[in-house]
Length: 225
Image (cartoon, rainbow, N blue to C red):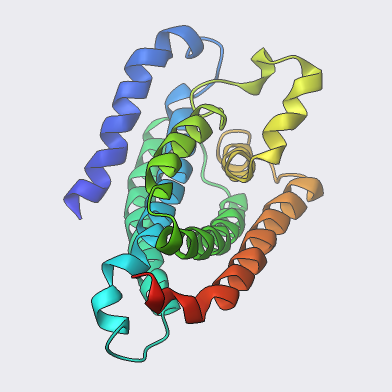
């Protein structure tokens, strides 16, 4: 439990030291800005990385006992969600000490969290199924998550990018959840309807695709473990 909280805090410290000098002067409440991005991305990475390995790490169980295989994936996601919740408590403490007001709008933070839970489950279903057949996908996914981190505007503002290219960031589901958090916590505003639809759309799309891939290959898993 301690490490689950310490890890994002150490990452936040490194980002603050490295990028605070360059971007901290132009972005209000830069520590909270960083924390929002790091909090969401860390949850996504932990949930999907653990979900990807959920089938293979429990192959000795479901190869002998007929149990629903998706339960192993769900357990990984529950564990990641608990760690996320603990880190959220630290995040709210940072918000308090930074002088940002707690308003009734904070209840809207449940929406991106719910969308992220569904999205992570969908990505976990896709990755765990693919990992059974292609073991090298774990190395590719590590590279992908690194690239995704830089594409999620965790430590910079998308205003540094030309206006015509800023729309590309909204093709990134993780950035949409991060932007939603920042709008509520830092700006004190409720995000637009378009932002709500984007978060929900990405979540449902990932989950439906994940369910389809999982169901289509469920009977093949035993032959590849």
